[in-house]
Figure 1 (cartoon, helix red, strand yellow):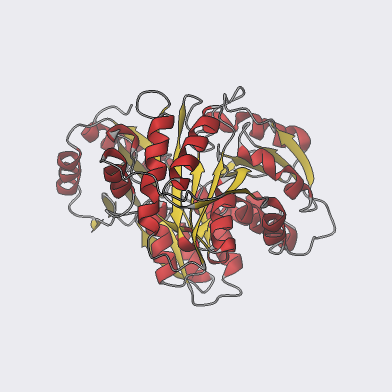
Figure 2 (cartoon, helix red, strand yellow):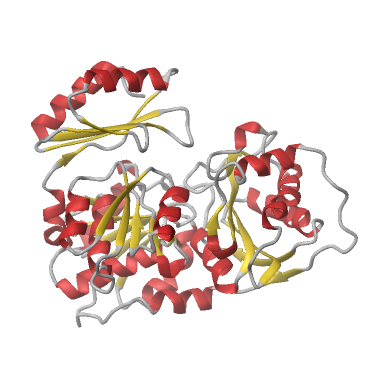
Amino acid sequence: MAGIFKAYDVRGIVGDLLNPDIAYRIGRAFPKLLENSPASRPREVVVSRDMRESGIGLSEALVRGLRESGVDVLDIGLATTPMNYFAVGHLDVAGGVQCTASHNPAEYNGFKFSIWGARPVSGDEGIPRIERLAEGEQEPPVEQVGSLSELEIMGDYTNFVLAKLGASSGRKLKVVVDAANGMGTLYEPLLERCGIELTPLYFELDGNFPNHEANPLKLDNLADLRRTVLEQGADLGISFDGDADRAAFVDEKGEPLGSDHATALIAGRLLRDAPGKAVVYDVRSSRTVPEYIEQHGGIPIRERVGHSFIKATLRGRDGAFGGELAGHYYFPGAFFADSSMLAVVEILNILNEEQRPLSEIAAPLRRLSKSPEINFEIEDKQAAMDLLKDHYSAGRLDEIDGIRIDFDDWWFNVRPSNTEPLLRLVLEAENDDLLAEKQGELIGLLGEPE
């Protein structure tokens, strides 16, 4: 089973390593993390799934395992991961499980977990404990198995999201949305209620992803969205990933907006009502992000990559907002969890209030040249990072996540992936020429990227 237990979730190819028997064992294991839950409904767990065909059998087996451990299951059916988090917090239950493999190809599936208040399952008492319990000898089923109830959550979730929508400018924004045949499809009625002129792309649930991979971080997957934005003369393009916990944005010129820049824009708006509060951003973010946060009265907090770290810091600091380069956006009002739809609403609010094109609003954040994330397959990752630390010893070193080394006119971050056997590089410079020079320099030290 070891290959499917990742840093933040369970994920793998459906077959020998992930199948209904293992899903049942995970269902028997997860309730151990919920003992002595302070939730007002401490025996209940929310379960939902994405559109993958394998999710039906895996979810059924998981539910059987949960119930035979004495847990009452609230099945909300097909749902996005943020809807699962919302249900856990809104209903004040002990925890939740979403059956999904996010943006991974069709042959994959998995589980994402949360506990009371939509808190992430993390650390040694999180996924590693589930793994140990699932692999170990399990107790007999309880005499009185837990109940199973079906529950509709979309109505409450819709009201929750729309409550954050500000006044319209009087002109309907034209918005193209690419659901990538994933769970963002469920948001079509909600998007229409946002008062926009919606052009939907690939709003048919299909876990085989017939049009393109459901990963908006890859530019190739934004090609149809970018083209349609230009063809329609749209104000905004939005792309969701497979389980719709991430959103990526494209401006009216068809140019992708970095998720670190989107984090800054959303933070700037939210800080108007929360002056002096912290905003958490990840170590890969542009230098313009903390500058923008400070300019808008916030306290920028740099954190390591990963939702459990961002959420914990945001909650611990009672912050205003958090965001990651990967397209995750975290809101205190959403139980400090990811909410792609709240990020969409805030970008719509900004466009309605500013009544300027997104490219113009974002221009100050885009003044530097930044690379995408570049991946290297390196066996001895620590040795590679030590080499870079020595080579660039004149820079300012931050080891919060791998190494980030800053110079006056450029910086880079190299960190081991939390989910794959890779070393990841991001760098930013004052101009394109310097970026190209330093990127070539780093590749010369690290070897050719994958």
